[in-house]
Length: 496
Image: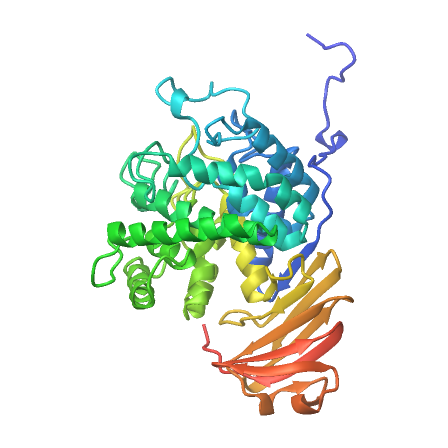
């Protein structure tokens, strides 16, 4: 049978693929000496394009296609480096506020027309999982840091407070969150057989995010000059941290939940005493070694893993994770031909078999959160929460083994910020930065002393464009106004 109006033979060259996504200008560019890492960055960007279509869907190709809150908050900072997401997330957060329950709970996905995709036994609890519902707090605060718009923060402030109040009212212990259904460390590799939820205790994850959301709500209150409410949330945060330590940290300072994600959350959310923090750093190093320096984290732990390693003196290990090409790793996906980010670390197994036929997305951007680390730590471009929106810029590149050069830029509300570094002979680094007009920048050079640093070919103490120089611990901080600058300095780097 011939279809009227259609040719008997269809030539595939007659078709043109058109990518549809919400209109967002690309603001971030990242290139480096590694073609595989460049492909990873490409995959992260295209995962965003494929999923940011009116709502931040978790995947564009199967029956969900929903604005899952957890995926959105895990990826929002990376997304906001890559593209101008302020209008997009402003609209989505208004939807979130409209769908927020009377008791302050947050649906798993927004918009939330129904819960029909869940089985009957989950429909009554299809809301308010830790790390998913926390999008109500994490997303507005991240946008404030990235764009400096108090209007959006003020608009979402009541929603933030209602979410925190919802957690406070759960169960019999107001400073622990140990009730309800939680996705936990979703799809972590340390999960039990036939389980999607990782080994990190769900009550641990929930209480850690409870503390984090309260801390961010306090910051929002301060930014909005709600000082009495800020004091309230500060006191609440202190109580939660105390309860967390009593429940999950042994008297000797060891975290009682022995997983990579558990330790990463405690360190990133600043939930430990100083002695316990040092113990946790050692614990994380041991857990990584037991996994042959590979990750076992899922949706909850992965976004914070590399940043925590870089912040706690294990930056070279973070580079090691980046450059792994075997399973599980980001580059394993790239070597398997991925052009977007996978839902599972083993979406395609090493023997070529599929992880699963029923829940196996190859365009699922959550693990693309590694993009934040590429911009904030490898290139070193980050905003200052005290003067958000890149009015004050922090540039602290952290070169590491495996990369010879990096070129990165972010188009901000004030103009383009550039950080570009190259490893030269005898271990020297050349760093070029561009600071937009009407902004200031603090450039941080690790492991150097001032008399070995050249700025635009002259000794640092003779440079006229420098607003200040401070030596803090093993870091040299140079304060600059707008302009283009080139630093050259020696630094010791360990080879890969």
